[in-house]
Image (tube, helix red, strand yellow):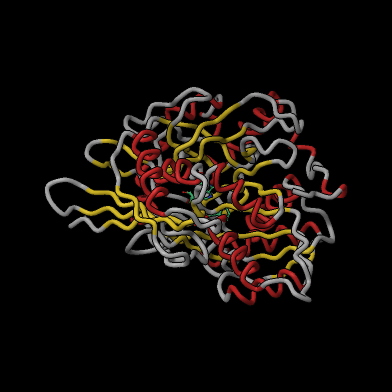
Length: 438
Ligand code: DLL
């Protein structure tokens, strides 16, 4: 890691350090505005609020009452596809984005001009917090298009006054050339794609060519472990910073790490109220407890959402951060509740396998999990590639099987495959191949 002097963290907006009391007063005011927008423009939301006894913004007397409001789910968005939950006329949208979702229709989201301005500002704030400065060259390898990653980081970079290179995802060998030749100091991409790019840089060799000058990586859009962070930092020689978000809120910019601590992602609490609930019974959990993240938009015009269930697991910590920001932090982003595998009765998160796998010397950071049901029981095979150092593959396989069994309580088969065989990611990595009959 070699972050230059110029990258010392700065504050973009005084609101980031607002005393909690003032922040909460602002949140309450904005929650009432959101309730007003829902009542005026979103019939489904208005009916649900009415059923919870909220017929007017004044009926919301405190932030605590939010706990009694009904939850909104992805299924609500899907049923209202594409524009049924808009609180403004469709003509008021200046942009739409969408998230792919598994099978079936994508989730479509819309932005008014004010929503886009807010989002750009949020991205500029988050990227500043991550160490980006005016004039830095940002190689933006997030996909441009319906995915919010490309345009999200693009807008934030321009708003800061950085030099944005809108490469988008794909054509990886060209990425390596541009990254070095244009002197990128910042790489923005999914963590898995960052590794693909790192490999392309390596393959290219460096005889007589420009060396990459990377300092910072702005990575997110998929779960990744501390072990993966260490791998990426080593491979690219940069400080890797975690970004979290989802299209239904705005895209990236919902919660991001500060470079000063890189210990938890500060939630943009002036734009989104965060809660953690028990995914089973919907009960609200205390700070520090792990559960499903739920967000309420506080500023969105086009698509205000009250208590939106993300399906993501995490924890909220409210202890002050060394960076001086007062906004609460997310930690333990382990993936989605429905990514959890149940193998012979034991719950297993793919991220747990990643953590254990990368902890073993001699493995490369490329893997996938294959679930099959050859007989009455599920079988899990972990495919991975050996590291560059070479060595006894049979010994590596045995060691991995032992570490995974001891670490998870699940017996799995490890297959050490030829380097380069596991498909490389150009966006969000596909980690689990489920071959079980439906
Ligand atoms: O992935 C927004 C984004 C783009 C965030 C680029 C950060 C960087 P969607 O395509 O709607 O939006 O997918 C959202 O991705 O609910 C999480 O399950 C997952 N996710 C996003 N960031 C992280 C992260 C964008 N840092 C879904 N850690 C979310 C873990 C993440 N999971």
